[in-house]
Amino acid sequence: AGSARAMPRRGLVEGPDLEFFQRRYFTPAEVAQHNVPEDLWVSYLGSVYDLTPLARKYKGDLLLKPIIEVAGQDISHWFDAKTRDIRKHVDPLTGTLRYRTPRGRFLHV
Image 1: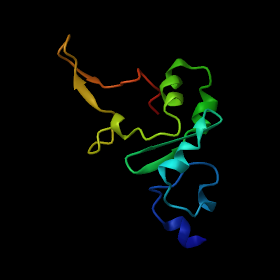
Image 2 (image 1 turned 180 degrees about the vertical axis):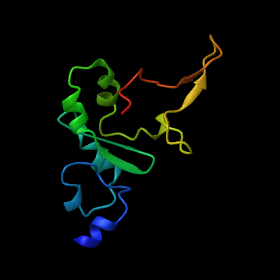
Image 3 (image 1 turned 180 degrees about the horizontal axis):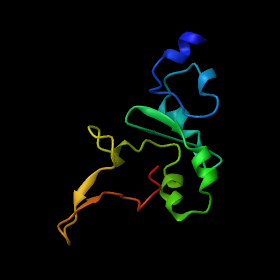
């Protein structure tokens, strides 16, 4: 068990039972099973995240809606693989650099 804790966290589902969780990889079908606010996982940039605690904390917040809409899915296209930050684009109306949020603004924790 001690060596499992020393392993990198990449690919593990975040959550209270992380230290007891031995599995490192999930198939898209397994992630897709966790697609409701009470059991909400997403994958992005090669990792799987349990966002259930986030969904509980911000229940009813409009900024949670885009995350609920993609529950059980991969959202890597929302992020820049190099910076790991939300993708940006130049707004054609203002010419300014803005975050690209195809489903609208969302909680950025």
